[in-house]
Length: 386
Image 1 (cartoon, one colour):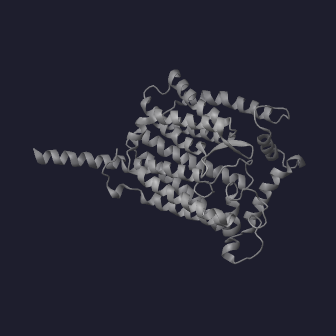
Image 2 (tube, rainbow, N blue to C red; image 1 turned 180 degrees about the horizontal axis):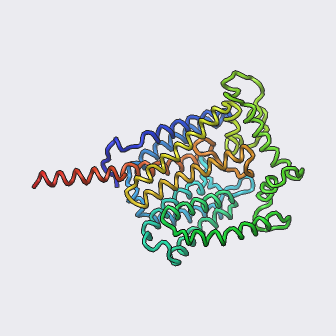
């Protein structure tokens, strides 16, 4: 379960990037809501502890419990469905009294870990109809429970991550081409249906977000449009170095002005733009890019397909969520309520991401270079013995 690893194979560069982005997150969350700064700090500390512990546990041993984790994931999502605590019209949390837990965030890590082992076990017959149908069915169960919360953004997010995972696993280009031929007409039909006033596919508030993006001039969706317009104004007002660094004491349009709701989560990038300007925004983007690249780099050096999928899966979560959050804050995409990884407030999301990074670090510790050195050492010992 716990091996003896060489310290030089530990990816301290990734740890430094994670610490840097987490410190920025604490600062920005504290600026958005001062009462949440200490909670965000506690979340970072908890996440770091879990990350270090998990990074020293063999991910191959953990993946042996793939079906137990899958079952626990379904159980948690069912508990949310039946007894979940509601907020803003969605039941996505389990309230333990002293803490609220969002199983969907942990579900992302479990799904990656589960399919990493599943695809490795089916590496030889991945492109057969039986394996493909089984993998889609296994994905559909948790996705349906997440969708019913309702949580459309995370449903689509995990669907996108799954597509990346199965591609990394070796999905045939023939299957990919056939899938696109089916999906493109379905997406067009879906969009045609959801723009209709009496549609039943998605919730009304979800439709309003899509409509506000497609028809920004329509006064019916002014509330949704105004949120993003205020966010863009706040980012632009920060100019090069931001109001905080320039010593500008004007009323902040994001924080003191309360012109953007959920500024500690969904629109945390607007806080960064206003207070630390273009340079602050670029720093966040570069750190998130560096974290994603480090995950991919370790995936390329993984000892097996499972490790490669885990690393690429975590890279996809960080990059996709970052892309969506920043696109929403800058008005490029409709409002989805997606948090910015390691920056937005949310202890479940923060700790879950650190758990995933712990797995990535363990994959790096057991890289092909590490295993090559171990084999060389074993051969040398055998020769000395002879």
